[in-house]
Structure formats: C-alpha cells, structure tokens
Figure 1 (spheres, rainbow, N blue to C red):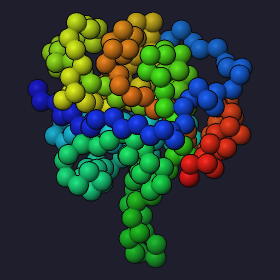
Figure 2: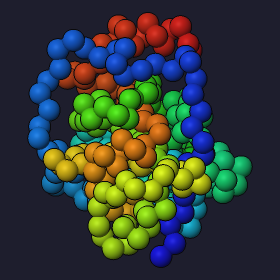
Figure 3: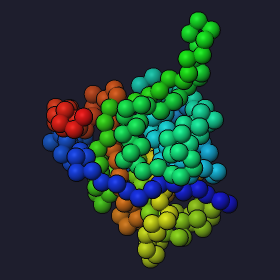
Figure 4: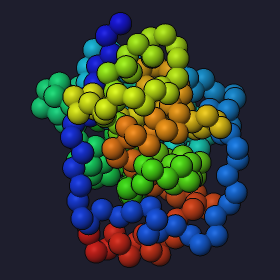
Length: 252
C-alpha cells in the first residue's frame, strides 16, 4: 500500500494567535471519550481518502474534513465534496503535487475558502462551487492534551506530525501508532484532522479511516497543531470573542 505524504516544514509566525491567549476562564467539562461522528448517527460521516493515496494533499484533506464537519453542525446536513474539484484546487494552490505548508494554507482557507457542494448555476450560466471560509485559526500546544481535546470538542482541530518510519506498517496492520522509539522523520510530514479521543489517545482522520495515536506518540511526533474557528462560532465556544477580535484587528 502506498500512502502519500505532503505536509511541508512547519512555518512559525510571531503574530500567530495562541489558543491559550483567548480561552475563556471557565471551561465546560470534557467527556472521557468523544468522537464527532457519534454525535450525528443519522449521517454517514466516515473518513474519506479524497485523493490522498495518489496526491500529497493531506493538508488540504484535513481542512476539507473539518469544513464538512462545520457544515453538519451549522446546516444539519452533509455538504458533499467533489473529489475532482478538491484535487484541482489543491494542485492549483500547491503549484503541482508538492505538498503544502499548514500555516500558508490556513491563511488561504480563511481568505479564499474551500470549494464544497454542487456546481451552481445562475440563469443557466455556471457560476462555480460555493467556497466556505473560516473566521480564524490559532496555534495549539501539541504537548497539551487539554488544548487538543478542547479544540476538537468545541472548535476544530488539525494537527501536523513528523512521523516515524514505522507509521506505514502500523497503519496497514490496523494497529495504533504507539511506538516512540524512532526519531521524528522530517521527510514524513503529514497533516490530519483530530476527530476525537479515547482514554488511550487521539483519533485522527487519515487515509480514509480513524487512526488511533497514543498520547505519548502525539507528544513526540506532532510538530504543529491548529484550532480552527468557524465563520459562525457556536454559543458554547471555549474562546473569548473579544480577545480573539482584538488580536485579529492587530494582525489582519
């Protein structure tokens, strides 16, 4: 089995907002275990590959997975993803199949949106597919289970990892990523949506399934994490909107 990788070296911007800086003082309790699709059993929300076996579009796929989940919450339905459109948009953004920098992609997602849903027409003329935007993105401390869980539970959470060379064998055998004896490999950059967690670790959307990664594995190999704030923030959000807007006014 060939699995494509495509997360480029992490880029850090001193202006990037951190999740810790905009958290509310009082946070709701976290469940012991949680996974997004179980909150909406009426829908088929199984992870999709979306071309990530043939293209290094993992950064784009993780974002599309998160945007689709946002629309389930907001619209009460699954907005379908056109895989051909997804591939074309990724290749255009990356300038070919060269992978993406997560931070650069997040900025583009915020400003230009991601294409989802059916092709639209106006008076019989094609006007393209609707693009969905996010309001903001904030960095997460990947060493903090609490931050990862809260971002997943009440916002959105995409992570990047420099995976050890053992990742492929474990994945194809259906085993958890739990070994931490190998060093992070900078050539194995991969982006994933964190979809939930159990006591043993995080549940990551990747290559068409949910992959369990233990907390020790996450702490060693995750080199960047991002909480995603949707355009229409939920009333029970964990972020302080005044703090967030204050930061956004300074940097946008």
